[in-house]
Amino acid sequence: MRSTPHRYDLIATDFILINLSFFIASLITYGVFDYSSAITGRNIALVVFVNIAWGWLCVYFNAYRWYERVRMEQQLSKVFKIIIFLLAFTSLFYYNILGEAPHTPFILLAHGLALILVSTGRVFHRLREESPFEKFRYVIVGGKAENLQQLFKAFDYCFPGSAELVGRFGNTPHANVSNIGGYHDLKAYLEGQPNIDKLIFFYSDLTLEQEREIMHICETQFIDVEVAPRETTMFPRTYKSQQLGDLSMLTLKEEPLTALRNKFMKRVFDLVVSSMVILLIFPILMPIVAIAIYLEDPGPIFFRQERTGYLNNVFRMWKFRSMRVNDRSDSKQATRNDDRITKVGAFLRKTSLDEFPQFINVFTGEMSVVGPRPHMLKHTEEYSRLIDKFMIRHKVKPGVTGLAQINGYRGPTDEVWKMEKRVEYDVWYLENWSILMDIRCVVMTAYNAFIKGEENAL
Image (cartoon, rainbow, N blue to C red; front, side, top):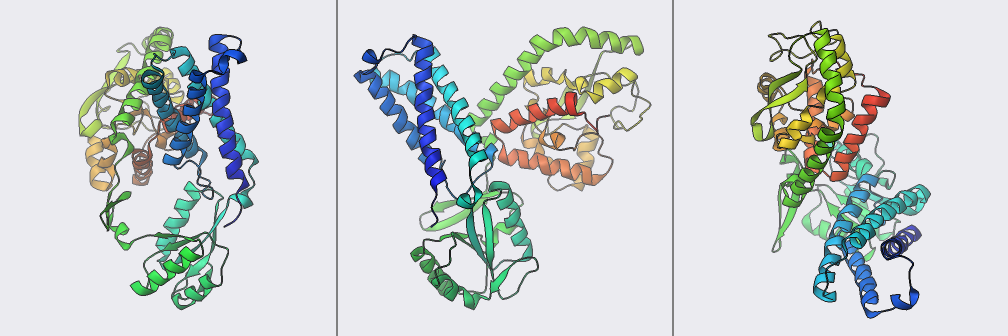
C-alpha cells in the first residue's frame, strides 16, 4: 500500500487541537494558568481521559480512512458527532470518576472550541493536502454499463478526486471505460502485484470457486475487496446490509431522521431558529410589510392555505399575502407575470420575505426550517400519480426552504420534469440528512435571496 503521511498529520493535528481547546478554555474560565497547580491527579486524569475518549470515538466513527478523501460536509458532520459524544462522556467522567459536577462554562467552552478548531483544521488540511498521496486506485470486475455509471457517480460524490479507475475485467467491453481484459486475465493480473488498493466485484460469469480464489489473492496482495450484489437493483432507494450469523441480509436503509437523537437535534434547531425569527425579526418586519400590503390592496395581511405535510397530514400554512384576493389560489400556481401578484407581493416573493410567517408553523411543529416544500392538496394528488417517489418526501416535515430550492428548483412546476428534480433532491435529503446540511441550506437560502437573487422567484 502507498505511504500516507497526510493521514498521520491529520491525526496528530486533531489531538493537538483537542488539548489546545481544553487549555484555552481553562485559561478563559479560571484565569491565568498555574502550572504548579495544574500537575495534579485530577487534571492529569481529565487530560488522559479526554485523549483516550477522543481516540476511541475517532476509531468508532471511522474518522481516518486514509484513501477515501470524503466530502468536507461529511467530514465535518462526523467531527460534530464525535464532539457531541465527547461532551457527554466528559460530563459522565466528572460525575462518576472525579465525583463532582462539571463546571458548565468550562465544559461548554472547551467542546465549543474543539468543534471550531478541529473543523478549521480539517478545512486547512484539505487545502494543503497533495492528491497523489490521497488517491486510491481500483479495478472493476463485471457489471453492466449502468452499474458502472452508478459507481462513478457515487465515487465522485463520496470521494471527490480520490478514486482512480485502473480498468475493468469483463467478457463484454464497455465504451468510455478502460477494459484491461476478460475474466480469464484477472488472476494473472492480480498475481503480477499491481499497484491497486481496491477491487470492486459486480456480478460476472466467474464461478464461486474462481471468485473465492481471486479474493484469496487480493488478501495476500493487501487489496480491499468490495462486492455489489445483483439484488441491490431491486431496491427503489438506498439499502443497508446486516449480518445474521453467516448470512448477509439486505434491507431498505433507515433514514437518519428515524433516529430519536436526530429528531431531537432537528427539533431543537427548528425551535432556536424560529424563536429568533419570531422574537427578533417579526417585530420589525411585520408592521412594515402589513402597511405596504394594505396600502396597495386593502384586505388580509396573511394568506393561509391547506398544504400536505408530515405523513400526508393536512395543515394550514402561513404566508404574507402577495396576491390580490382571488378564487383560484387553491388550484392555480403563480406564474411569471401573473396578474394576481401585486407590486408589493412581487418584491416579497423575490426576496422570500413572503415566507417568513411560516416560522410560526415551524415553532408549532407543523413544519421544519429545512425540508421538502409543501404543495397544495390538488398538486399532491396529481403528482403522486405521475411521479413514483413523490409521496416518500412526506416522511419528513415540510420546510420553509429545502435542498431542491438552493439547487435552483424553486418556483412554478409547470413541467413534470421540474417536479421530478425537486423530488429527487427531496428524497436525497431524506436519506442523507445531517444538521450541517440544514445549516448549509439556511445559509445558501439567505445568500440566494438577499445577495445573489432568486432567478425563479415569482
